[in-house]
Image (cartoon, rainbow, N blue to C red; front, side):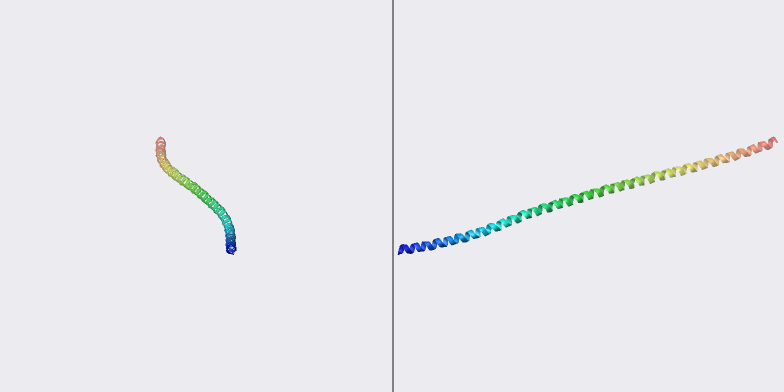
Length: 131
């Protein structure tokens, strides 16, 4: 009877251990499913991060390209402006030189005209003297 009681006690303990092992197994299965789901979430999140980084790099490249185009356009504009300003300065210089040359030519023409009138006057005097 003592042995029988011990066997029953042992059987109850074995049954309790089996039930505990079963509960632990179920909990392990739940945890494994959660780990698998989290692992999938991590993979998806890494993919999202990679895509966002690629988008950010592409946006940075577009911004740098736009900035470079703007800088080239500004340089081109400044070059044109500088070129136009230089052309204006050259034209102003040429105009001033032409104006000065014209005044000098007019002054010389005035002198020549005066000399011609004086000579014409002398010739008239000579003609009167010859008559």
